[in-house]
Image (cartoon, rainbow, N blue to C red; front, side):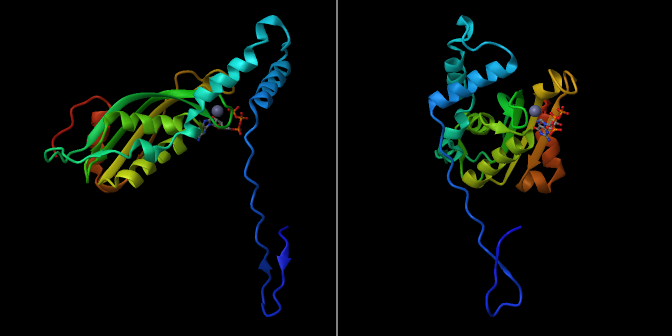
Length: 218
Ligand SMILES: Nc1nc2c(ncn2[C@@H]2O[C@H](COP(=O)(O)OP(=O)(O)OP(=O)(O)O)[C@@H](O)[C@H]2O)c(=O)[nH]1
Ligand SMILES: [Zn+2]
């Protein structure tokens, strides 16, 4: 139970302020490599046999790439806005952007395609920047729902568009190669803001375009 401090004039106990967690120290490379050796031994192999000697180094190097998102910033990716778009005011859709991520429950991959749209208000961003935002969040430990919500929030906060729509399709290896062993299941998550949230017709246009169809004009 939390400690309580009884203020002399208070009728109800005032909870003591919660101690803030100390900022986490990033383990050293050597510590990370030692952890990999432990996992190899736990899996049942011998981390000192020749074929596995350099594996901890490789795994740590691979982790730097797979989890590079922790060192990336969505706001930086979305910093540069092009305002001269000659009056273009319809949605911009990037469909079928491939991604690889890792589920935060089992630390095994999930992967698939993301479809992202926004309705520009004060200009547009470079197309690659939307794909970068996806990577900023995909290259972390994730759930598909959080990944979807974080992309929406980043675009919404930084571009203040009239609306953002994100649909992500993913196959989770933790469901296909272990556990329930169901291969080929596609999980679909969507999140909408602004005009996409308020106008079902805009949602339909987005989903039609994301699925490769031709959307009817506004
Ligand atoms: N909602 C959600 N669930 C996920 C995601 N990735 C993995 N999971 C699920 O996370 C759950 C973790 O469940 P637990 O019961 O704690 O773990 P577990 O015993 O390994 O579960 P099983 O996978 O059923 O064997 C599983 O149902 C996974 O399918 C995700 O992105 N979103
Ligand atoms: Zn999982």
